[in-house]
Amino acid sequence: MATTRVFRSGHSQAVRIPADLQYDRTDIDYEIIREGDELRVYPARHRLDNLADKFAAFSEDFMSDGRGDEPDQSRDAL
Image 1 (cartoon, rainbow, N blue to C red):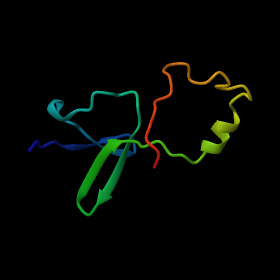
Image 2 (image 1 turned 180 degrees about the horizontal axis):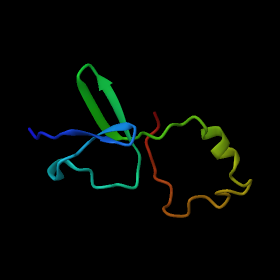
Image 3 (image 1 turned 180 degrees about the vertical axis):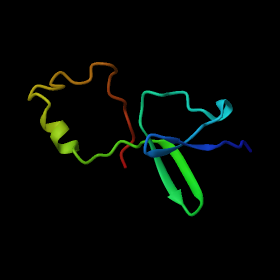
């Protein structure tokens, strides 16, 4: 188990993450959840709130030629 210290960063409290526990990426957001005395930090999950808007942004001919990467597989009927 690693130990660390809490410190002030502007108007927020911050925690140093020891090198052996650090995340590989610093270009994404992380979420923090507090459960009792525990703080859990994990990469932010992408929400699907605007999924319909994203699909609506596709052009009408999007994938009109199919995927083009592999032929369809033959499968047994259900």
